[in-house]
Length: 328
Ligand code: NAD
Ligand code: AKB
Image 1: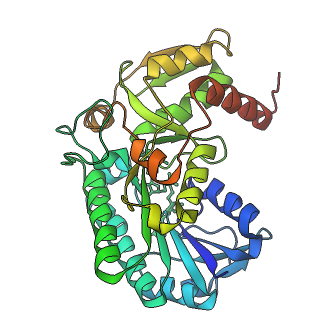
Image 2 (image 1 turned 90 degrees about the vertical axis):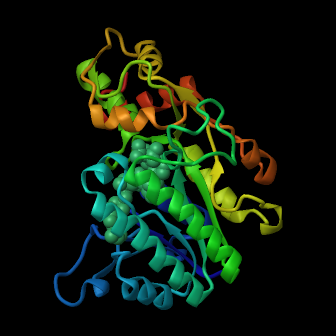
């Protein structure tokens, strides 16, 4: 089996996807890469700053530099790339030019290297690829997509670019439109759905959280173990079953900040939440669907979420209590 490369591997998703891939395929089969470093020596070119971090190979790769991607793909005989590197929605809105360069430039270079070396590519799109004119409830798989954020514009363009490489060059590109992801291993990287992670930390530390979205802002969410499993299952599916290769709607739960706070309150006595709405992130959230229809994913490759709001909340609090050393 040729190796797997993960870009942006030290982020919220990569911190759990890399271990999940290593458990499944073997530690030395999965090369983690990022522009941040676990460990590195300061001499030599950036692309050569490389370390085996004990769990498996790690290399510095800035995905806007095609040579750095190509070197690692060649050196490790990579056959599949999970391309996670990107700027998330709130950060992208602050730095739109960088967001375009990293999100589009990075994907374009990954696809070019994949074409050269016949690699399969996984691309994580987002509910951000939809916009205010998209049907809001149970958003269909195939529908109007006119995103109004730079993040959404890069995600929609990326979906189309992945389709193009599949149709034009026969590249095996696949992807998911992920909802907001909730996890306790690594912090979220600057998105609109980050409140749904921060709330757990603050609830345990201070029994209080000030939310930057309005109480009634409904968005699709998913627990990270479901998300990493979905990515691996999609990439393992026989290609002949896939009609929507690059942008499957997937969902596990859909809720508002007020509903999440009520669920946490069942486990954290006295937890209180107030609101200090951030107009930028609220506007982004208001342009996204309340919930998506993921029947295409269920029918074409058997997608089935395992975690709902109550089970995810229990597990998050349990694991964070262990991490904070206050198990009770
Ligand atoms: P994150 O911000 O936590 O991590 C992104 C990683 O990319 C970081 O470690 C960062 O150092 C790295 N990076 C940034 N610029 C880079 C570059 N030029 N070259 C290489 N690496 C670079 O993001 P995440 O939450 O892990 O998301 C990963 C992907 O999944 C992104 O494409 C994101 O849009 C998508 N996604 C995430 C969510 C979510 O809720 N986390 C939801 C939908 C889609
Ligand atoms: C963000 O809020 O930017 C991400 C996403 C849903 O794409 N979590």
